[in-house]
Amino acid sequence: MKKINLLITIIFIINGCTQNIESIESQNKEIGFEIEEGNKVSIYGGSQDGVAIMEAFFDAYNERRVADVSKLEHEDIELFAPNGMIVKGSEEHAKLSNMFLEANPNAKWEILWSISNDIDFADKPNENWVTTVVNVSFGEGDSETNLQRVLDAQIVEGKIKKVYGYERVISKEENQK
Image (cartoon, rainbow, N blue to C red; front, side, top):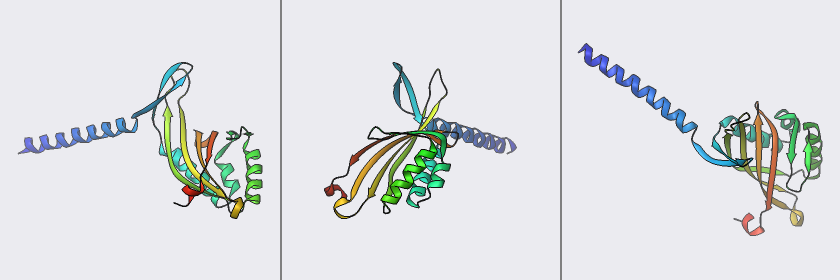
């Protein structure tokens, strides 16, 4: 009887260890690639911490807490806007954000989805990037604007380091759905 109990205990231990290995493997599942200097570099599913940072970023914007937006950014953040503008530094970003919010008091950001990716470079440190899609609306009546933005944000040490933004106008037909 003792041998059976010992055998059952060993089976549970082995099963528990293998389930842990499987979950670690699934957390690091390869989900794509990018080309870096002519070489194919693997991209893996990344940490959800970066997704939470982007969620907090847009929550702060929606609540007009620009100081909290700045706390989520590195002081030397670089933001590359869809119109070609480059914003350098958290202080400059805060200044422009306050100007935008003052001119557009009803501005709203709605996250549609957000996904974190880890890039496994061979010759430099790995990087974490979070891609987030948001619907942005501001203005009223004939001057109402509705955009959909895709933002690729590099997360370094728990803060946003760099952002590339892309956008398209949402048609009135889409907006009515």
